[in-house]
Length: 126
Image (cartoon, rainbow, N blue to C red):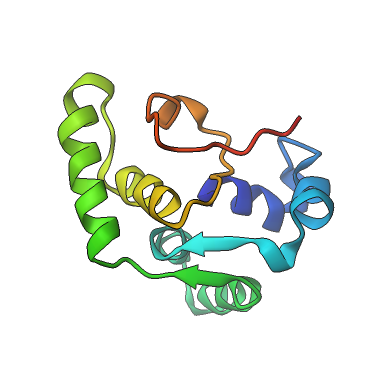
């Protein structure tokens, strides 16, 4: 989701022109919920206080799901299952676990980073 939001926020560089329509029309901005990991990744991209302020303002409209015990345990299981075979990263395991535990679809351009996780439902643009 981090990659999708970066694209959505920087409309001059949309690598996928349909992201705005998908988020605003198909999903609906009021239905977009982000993982706390996604929020942290976006905040990490800030290069100064103005950037940080802009990112916080843009993210303020979205609900954030915090990591809890279930998400942590699921993420640990995903790391055990997929770190060596697929190179699953810590942040990606937490984002996937959040989607799994909340039974929400994950919208990402980085399908290769998640497609091997059977319990995870990825958002399809079609």
